[in-house]
Image (cartoon, rainbow, N blue to C red; front, side, top):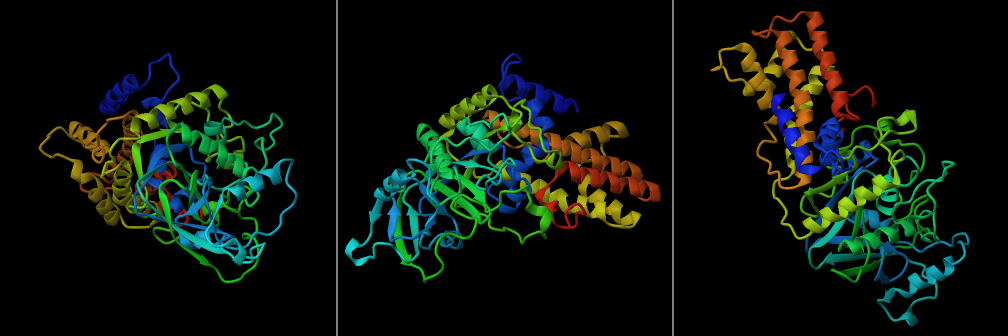
Length: 486
């Protein structure tokens, strides 16, 4: 505990003065599980579903030579703002002719004509019918490393449940009306997408232009998507293929940038755990700079969800405009400092993987099983004995030192070069300390020889591990054997 206090105090002094509004190690430690899960779930679809209301942003790089896909109803490629998908199947959902929609607001037709004028003809117009009756799948290759802003959680979905809070409240500075209606829309919507989405993308691209970024990366129901602010920059088209004739228009209730769900969060509570690497981007196609992480979890802001039914999902509705502006300005400073920085081969997400792989299944097995005392003792010994130095004769000192080693074991080698590194360290140390406290408590209940625990002690150990699982809220636990999520 003394080591944690010393490190936290040092980091707090290094990041923010007591009189200023800014990130602090104390806040990061208090929100350790949320920070850990943001890092661990980053660029992972299942983790994004489990924790859909993303509060964190990262500088992301798509390397040269990565293939991205775009579906539309014309043999034309956008030259300005539009959507790309990492997976072919995701883009093919939109590789179909557009269906007529309802009349838009004043100026909407003019915006549509403007967008159509920004298209590049790939074939002789005289050989194509006036209205396309086919869908087209376009594939692009990046011609240089491209830098984006990654917005975590299910930020590509829609609705008023909090999935777009970080985009509207934090990045765009758009607030809800006093009567609680949905976020105000100032301009016409993108014709082929959900209401307000094109305006949201425009605003995000305006910010990205200021920050020298190519666009944003988000997760939606069908997978990860890229809002590319300028298709003519940093990409070349490698193929454009006409698709087989099919129904007109995008999938029902779905458009680019729309996860297809606007009601209360459904997510992991309504289905089984998916296979490993479910719709993940995978290693290499996008690289995050974790030293650039900026998160609402770092700041002393109110993240309470006004809907008590979803108290576990953070919201930005209780924040102030000044707080959001301060975080946005802080983000701009971080991006400017990190945009030319080399990427680390071993990252904080790698550290989170080590921690989850080490403890996750063992904690869950103890919590949910009816194992014998000997089996439980064996699991506990496996997890904690590595930290115990039996050369120390005093038992209390020996256990105290072992607990400290346990709390910092996986994070001790990580360089603390930036504010983000120091804040992530504080959050990771807090959750490691909680894990180690629970494990050493179980060790004490089992006794020195590991066979002293009676049935009441075993039940207390299981209850301790169940409480630990609830505290950690790892996506690996959700939808598996956890009885909260059948």
